[in-house]
Length: 615
Image 1 (cartoon, helix red, strand yellow):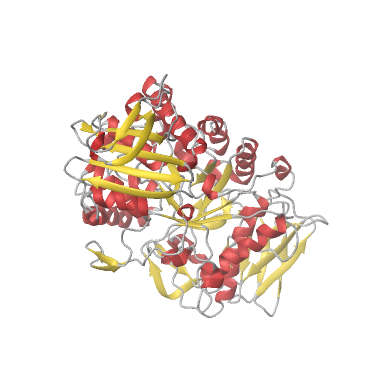
Image 2: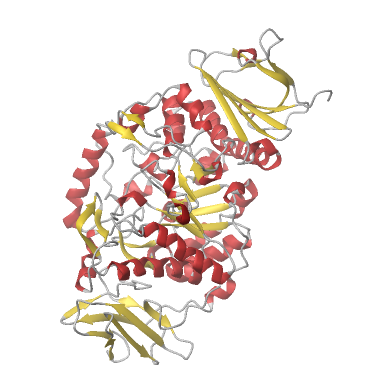
């Protein structure tokens, strides 16, 4: 664990000698003074260095002290504030986590090929919506076979509730969740259970309420923006110090909070024409932080580029990230199961596309896309399956529908089980969205709590975007408290008999994934589909271990001999059995002309190859 003291770190950092040191980047300021609200309204002027940083020390400062930075004649929050107890526009507060971090247990080395990720939004994961309440519910996930929890963003954003993608204070932990100490307790509880923690971070834009940053320096890109707000200046004048802001932010999460890595939001929205790509330098920085602490942070990108450059090593011209989400896998699975074709689903829908998604993570790999109205993506060459994360649902794909509908509201329960099986036994790194392990039926809406001046614009933008993606009905008002409350997980469903059946299936699927070599991430994969019969077959092999996933997505039972693959096969699991182990593994033949078993409608059957001569 790195030590969080020292004057080289941005912001207000506890000093080993007592008190706090301050380092503020402010090339546009003439004077910067720390102005306390407590203990006599003391003022501590900071000294400006030639590099544009203001530095100083206050031996009398104590954790919890609230302060402003007086920048010339303006009273502003600290750009790298660790805590905003009165909201994003209020004073900052000093934080000292050294005692709290002593609870952090040693962490294991995360290896994506062996991990199962669980995406979690703290505010809706429990009735209380806090880190402590979420921590109390982690043990069942570990028992289920989940190995990594990925938190949606927890930095301080506007209002009391939201998804976390409207960042204002990148360094401050959301007070509504429990603040900095609450996050440390959550990470400690996860590590004690053997769970890794990934933090979703938003480095591609700021909310409009972060405009105060521009009084300090050129944080925002002068020529580019994103659909959600200003994008960082990572390739213009003084961009090296803007980059440092994000590098220091990553170091803080890794060292001071003990997280194990990051999910990087929409990396393609960072405008960068530099000769040294921002994301490549970011990955090198994170590796250096990890090396100093004897561990390797995991870096997973959300990218709309469909370009393996994201995960190629920096030395080979890539960005050096560990993995990226495969939206194409989701789109192929969702469109095949639901029949939806609006928006980006227009490029998907056939069972053949779903079969190809098991063989390569990008279907749009340089081919023409009707949605993009151009060629999109690049060939998938020189990458491993464990460099891609797949899912049948996530916060974006559910919440950005408008109706917030999970698969349990869109499909018969039998097909929801099939979707789970295909995702968790795919050759990539699987991710569950919170609640789907027990078949959650409540929606997950988009919700936010912006200032009134932004509310009308946000509503209109949501309606416009949803119409473009085939959802003509206006969504629930994101600003209403009821929209947020209706998105909370349902504890009654989790404790129900139906919930337990889903949980048993997920546990059985993850157990198979762990125990059967052919289901490990590095195995070879071949898939084929029969559109008219609505039958999909996926064959995965590793050495002598071979498994077939046989999915009937239609309404009519189908004979297994249609597949035509030689061998003797034993049934290991059927989704129609809720994952319950069978007393005897029935034998199957998949060859034409042989005595054939029937694949029931809306069912996934998992078959394991039986060695010749074995009985």
